[in-house]
Amino acid sequence: MANILAIDTSSAWCSVALSLEGQAVQFRHEAVTAGASQLLLPWIESLLSDAKASLKDLDAIAVGVGPGAFTGVRLGVAAVQGLAVSQNIPVVPVCSLDAIAAQLLDSAVFKSSHPQRLMIAIDARMEEVYWASYGIQEKRLPNRIGDIHLTKPEDLNLEDVQLLAGSALNAYSQRLPQFAGPIDPDVSISALGILKCAQQSLLDGVHCEVRQLEPMYVRNKVAFTTAERAEGKQ
Figure 1 (cartoon, rainbow, N blue to C red):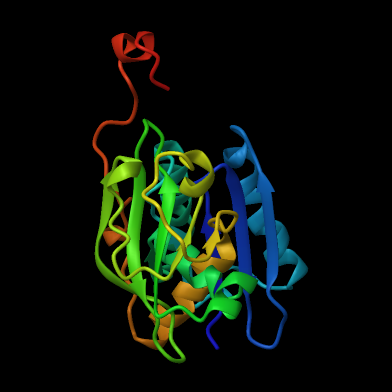
Figure 2 (cartoon, helix red, strand yellow):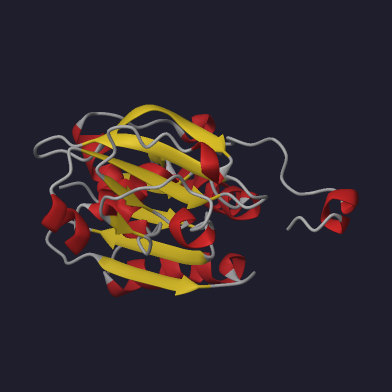
């Protein structure tokens, strides 16, 4: 088992997980407003210290690269760039929707419904959602089918979807297409999902050099204009 540090700051949470061979996974996850930049590095230092380990003991550092909050995604990527460069550590970029799909495997809703195809849909703000469909594979993490989409809530393509999950369910409950199957509106991004994806990636021999690490931007526009806000958009 590889020694992996996993972090995510792409949402309203600061999240860090440390997996070292022979030790239980350490995990810190806390809702923040604008404080992730103050918490992230001290948390990493604390987890490594508690495990009596250092950066040079890591086989890889994994990070959520989005899509998500632009400032948070950039923070996480920049932090990992700094940490990885210091010890020439390989990095594993993880899509936030992939991480949520990986976490969903442990949910009661997934275990009771046994879907063969699921969709993750998260609030993208500006009255839009990020979404992607996944196929279920035996003994592997969900396989993303096609691209990550950014659309209005009404435009989700739920054809063949057997389980729908993510924050878009709460944010746009009245605007999503009708769906009669099981749902999980509460599953969200965390470093544990990032860690799961990174473990699978390393088993598959997939990682990159730190100079190749960059955020995943699905949207170019990050905020409404003053005129749009005056029209009542948020």
